[in-house]
Length: 255
Image 1 (tube, rainbow, N blue to C red):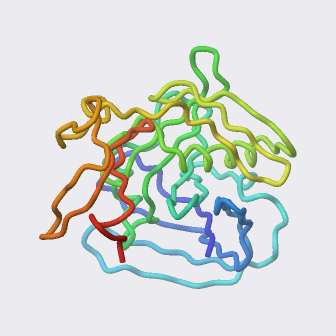
Image 2: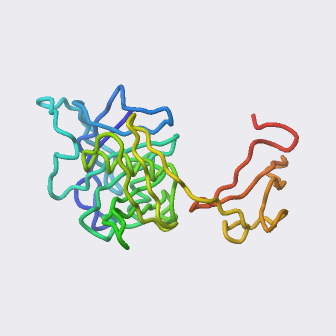
Image 3: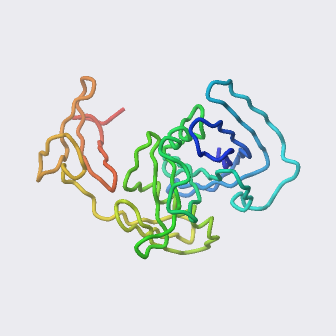
């Protein structure tokens, strides 16, 4: 199920109440062969509000009329507008932040928004911001734990689809994006897919970084690691954020 929503009041204080409005569902969201999907609103509307110490209340109501306007066009002051995307199972809250070089929410507020029980739910909050150093845009991410990674591959693909929606881009396009990991150039394809050159992977253990000892050319490659009494073969790599990659347990594949 896809969804788009607004949050009120403005998230200027962690102590304020959060209210989700215009929560919309879509039975057949756009999806692509690389499992990147973007979300458009439809008619059903659910309002959800919860105070820090009060029980959650919900209401389900039908919109008075069906609107054909894009959700991104239905702007209201005093709201944080967002659209939720997923790429290969990584889901993100996308915020149009192009009018400011400062994120609209703090890392602490991002943690609350990403909470899957009491917030929107997501792996992180991504901000589309003005470009710097000659780039078209800047992308920043707050993870669900409040940390800020340099980059995210699935995240930047969602970011590209979000920009395409904001700018009403059709067909093939490319633009430059400043990230903590450097310059990224996503390419929108005719079929709606997004191609991103992630650059050369970082394998040097101290640069990933990882605490596992290097076992090949200062890198951790097919190294053994014990997890709850089972041995896994892992390789550590960074594509702007650290990864521990495994194809299965030592001597076999993961179940």
